[in-house]
Image 1 (cartoon, rainbow, N blue to C red):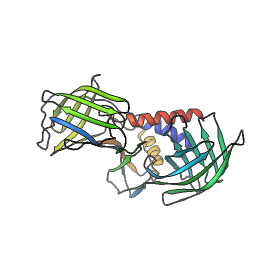
Image 2: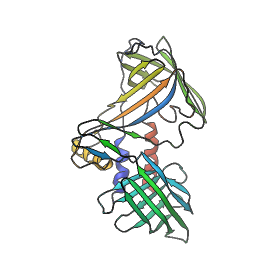
Image 3: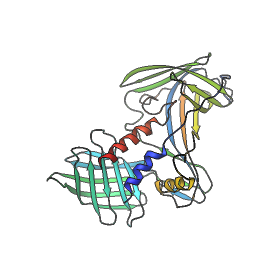
Image 4: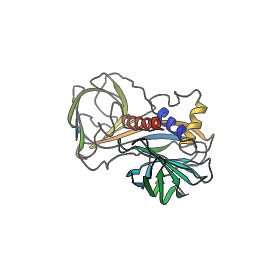
Length: 330
């Protein structure tokens, strides 16, 4: 199986460069003014993929359902990778929600064996696991496996489904990174941004860590908004103001394939990652979209924890660090 290759791939695909721009006006391209106080109400990020044929992509960070592990350890697996080179397919499942109980579950489609590796006391559980895969859904029938060094056991059961995305030929298609630990509409969390007439901005974030206030500067040029934080780091967004809604969009941060020796290597790894037909990918980049509203606030969503306007990929970085910790435990 290629689970180590998958883990390394996740660590490679996310790196973004910061850029800067010049001062101009504060009027949006749709005629609305950016000046005012805006509440962050939605934030999505993911990949733009273009293929030369009609495809159905699977996204490891966009799954529904749950596969439960109970017994000596109790948690839910919430990331699923598929290896279609075996028949039936094999799987690697990850639990990344609890730093104190991270785990990898490997299901071998050829042998029907399951291996659970945890970072708690270095325990490894092994045994036969009954599972099936049909039309994007992995189903595990209640199965018990045993710690290889003791009599401790865990029982595994449940189902997990890829939210599969149809990609029409030659059409850039968005696949969302959807990996909130909590429901973004629940709990404590709120971010507001006040854009002033003088090109300054005040960002207030409230969550369980307390209240944080940052002072930024900004400029606009046509449909581009450049934000600079207190550390002189900048980020450029395309933006529009329509009524009470401010939309920020960023893509093409840097050469997506810059970490690879050749573009062919990059495309091949990306095809494998999303379970695309080899040789079909023609373009790949990242995209981030943030929605703000002057009239509506959405408790539970804040840019410090969910997505950051200066470093929008921080949430992915957090998870790639967790994956690195898991890799080191193997």
